[in-house]
Length: 205
Image (cartoon, rainbow, N blue to C red):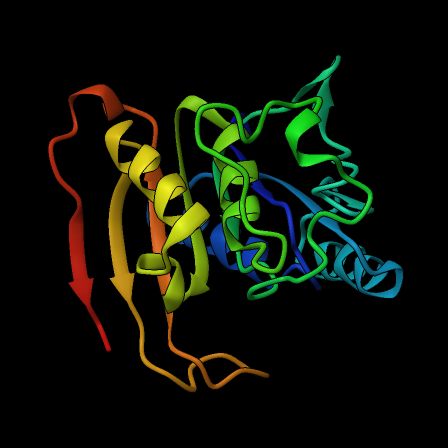
């Protein structure tokens, strides 16, 4: 159970449980699951889901991940082997309760501050900061994060120059409940980032 998996926007926990099942089926290992969810009722549902699916030791905490991350090592964010997330698309209230240019966890340092009305890169940068130095991450975001300009363009350039993006998978529209817009999966990998020369891209539209 040494391998840790974290979802900062875990909802009812289905993505975490999927990872746990795949790890057991593919590698025969049982991973330790961690999740944070903003909505109190949904966080309770996630805890119940964990128990029902034989992950009674999973830790699910309730709170706003960007404004008040609850998984910490002293004053820094706790880091994990794997981080997965399907954050709310283009969250317009992402900075509520947070002063981005004075973030105590330094999540935006060296990358830039996401625009006030588009929280996609805020979640991505939180995920990046929550990954161990050899860790990996995967995040589902709206397709627009691949080409929107201004502040997001600058963040994207910094991410690419640091080599932390390993792959991008473009997805079709109408794939996710509640939204018809096309999405993408951005795969992050800190291991070997300095030597990374390209990004593996899949058009799965």
